[in-house]
Structures are given as C-alpha cells and as structure tokens.
Amino acid sequence: MLALPYSPEAHHLIDAAALARMKHGATLVNIARGGLVDELALVDALRRGHLAGAGLDVFENEPSIRPELMELPNLTLTPHVGSASLTARWAMAALAVANLMAALGKGPMAGNPPTPVNAASLKR
Image 1 (cartoon, rainbow, N blue to C red):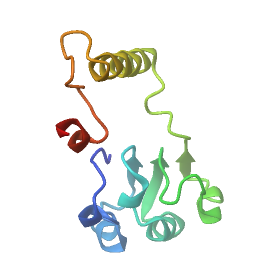
Image 2 (image 1 turned 60 degrees about the horizontal axis):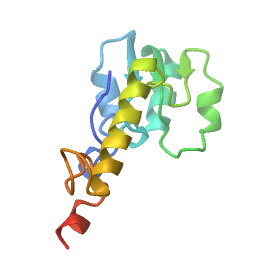
Image 3 (image 1 turned 180 degrees about the vertical axis):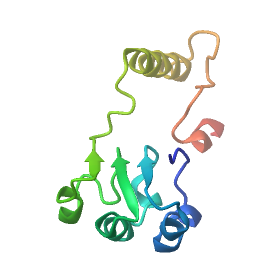
Image 4 (image 1 turned 180 degrees about the horizontal axis):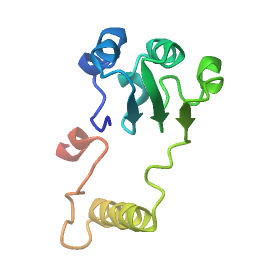
C-alpha cells in the first residue's frame, strides 16, 4: 500500500522494475498520489498476471483516467473516497475552521493557521 507524499523524486516510484520485484500474485494499493505509479507498467503487470490485482484511489492524470485501466477486471478504481468517513470529514471541517479563525486573528492560534497553503505569505 502506498501512502506517501508526491515529489518529483518520487515520480513513478513504482515503475516496471519495482513491479517486477514484487512477489508474484501480490496486490498493489495506491491511496497516496497518482504520479507515484507508472500506470502503463501497472497495466502490463496486471495483464501478464504478475500482480493478482491492484486498487487505485488516485490517478496519474486526474481527472482523466487511462482507458487501459478501465478494461482490467483485476483493478479496482475509486474516486478519491479514502477520506470519505464521518470521522475524517469532521476532522477536515474542524481544521478548516481552525485555519479560518487563525487567519482572521481569532482564537488560540490567532495569526498562525495550523495548515497554511502559503506559509511564506504569513511572514509579510
């Protein structure tokens, strides 16, 4: 299972060579970022039967999905539902409120949002 941030260095971290090193019959699940997996190499590994299956919650060229992925019976595709639990959504809402309050200079984190998108802009 892949659960790591995307970076240029991690682009296609799971490529044909990495897939070949996986145990025959393994399953790959990517809940991280689409660019981590070389989708064409994944298609090949699934078609050849090297991998038993795969699950992707993210795609390399979102929102587009490669047609080859849609044709594989041993691949499960989901539309970013990894965070679709009540607990996760409440936490996301609470974090958004905390950021808004801090950005407005209110509350215990006034002026210091917990997860700013552009932290450099706070130093002005």
